Image (cartoon, rainbow, N blue to C red):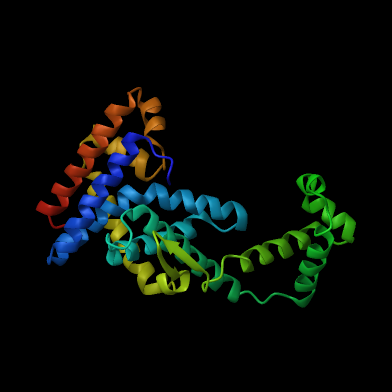
Length: 264
């Protein structure tokens, strides 16, 4: 999230403006409109984090995106620029934390057989004495052969162990000099929050459908396909500056749509 080009940075500056407006407006409708815009602009960050976690834990990306979106909404509602000037850093903690809650809840629902728990310990003991070179070439199949167990059981034990290793909710993190635990920042994931996030998603979908075609395509690639501005430029045969300008124009257009029309 820190390696941004100038065009990416301009989007984050726009988000900061929306957050400032969100903080001072007393209109619930206006807050909802601003929140929807921020969610659209930040969704690539949520998806990037979800993909990173999913590669390690083999969870459906869609479920992690849903959980991360709830973390993003909470970040918007709680953000205080005096404590953390860069929203994307603060939001990142809550997005990751909500994904952690989702995965911990999922693990809690799984009754792990004792043999899997014992196998996980055997695997730990087996790999702890391996050299870095041996670890680099190690696979589940090799572990299974060494321990004389089915490879599927090895994969299950490794996956369960990975889930349990997710950073503790009591872990203290530093947000621009201010310390807090992940547990304090991210209350538990629940169905009501999931349902509200889904309703918001439906509203965002309606807004995007009402964009002019040349703007709609860019927003769809950015929001739904998680494409970077450089990738969008290449796909549409445009330069990156044009993509950045059209994306900003699309955000402005979306704001006007949800400001002037009540969506059913």
